[in-house]
Image (tube, rainbow over all chains, first blue to last red; front, side, top):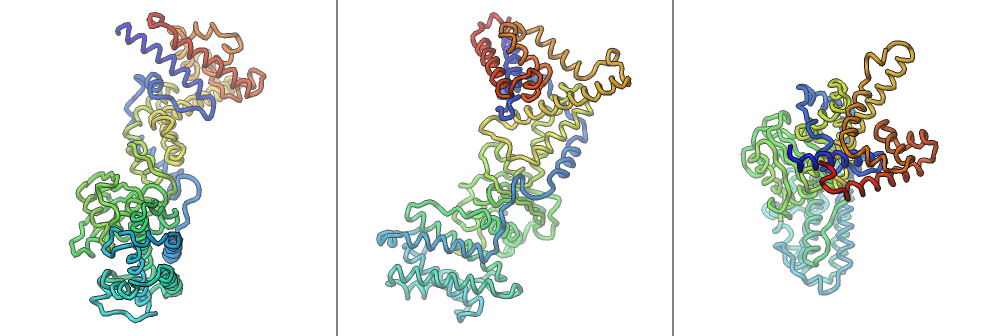
Length: 329
Length: 200
């Protein structure tokens, strides 16, 4: 050993001791890496075989399921999620000045005013799903943009106050209707087979997406749904992912996949694709719950999102690529 | 389908991703953490306790604690490895103390001849004392006022917590903390100002 090495070794040893002494304070900082290195130099030892299994068993005894700390967010009903997002959008719309209503959006509909008119058309369609209003012909009802075309034309010259009032009144009516609808009711929401719950999940995703479309047009912050809404939507997305390939008219892979949604409203989901059971897991996908929802809305693209895929990477990426098949605009 | 739920923010680093996965209830992430840090945790516990079985128990406890409370790791204050090292060291010292207390009780009951069978704690203290004697730390500590020397010795070699330190010295906990911090501050200043030659 050179003198220089000896100097560093002994000096680091002393620093490590000092760090350990500092740890006596219960709020002390963790050992810094240099002190830790000195403390543990030569200590690293191959653990005995079986220790990992023992560790996992011990861990599961401590926390089998549920939040890591504190109460988990309360999952809200799809209707309640829709109502809250609608309220949020209403607040945004009532804050706009005259110029802002004419700002172009990155949607196929045009300016902010046009997006809200589009939403009026979709709320009317949704009331048709529940049998409250007459349904348009299938070729119109199945096409998301076409389904709102008549409303957009009708409302093109309407004042903004009247437009917002009309949309919000319809949105609340949709929520009230969905809340009282029988849970075993079944209809086609565009081309997607849906129960009232599924329909309201789809509508909530859409309202959130258009809220962000308007926010982007205005240069305002994007919506960050509360953890309860996020949990409702991310959970719905996780449950829907195995059906995305079929909806896209493709053969589903046959594999178990673990989806780890991190951050507020996240969770861990073991999913069976095709005929495969959820376990064993061929691929693990790790992505923030918020980002996963934005992918599902097609308001984010894969390259913008931090994702970790372990195991079968092409399978994981393929699943992510299908996350947006429910989005209609 | 199994579901667990979480409520805590994500982070961008590799450690941050692993922690976010733990918070989200992904136990496969715990296996990843074990793969990365298991040898350090086990090895450090074995070094401090001198006992393989105890080290295995401590490793289980450390990783189970991480699984139970991943939100307690603050990556702004240090790496995950540093956090695990700190927790392992504390648990190991606790284990040694616990064993020493038990053996002391047994010795008092006449069950053990401590002179013929040195305790693990004695081994650890001897091991650390060797470092002490070989290095500069002892001489530096000896240059401190007697009350600060005593506080440092109790803290490190006896492994006292702050509360125990205060009780042993018969002073309030706040005073013990101040005394120890002052001593540490002086020691750090000495380490920083000593020329490299002093360590050769």
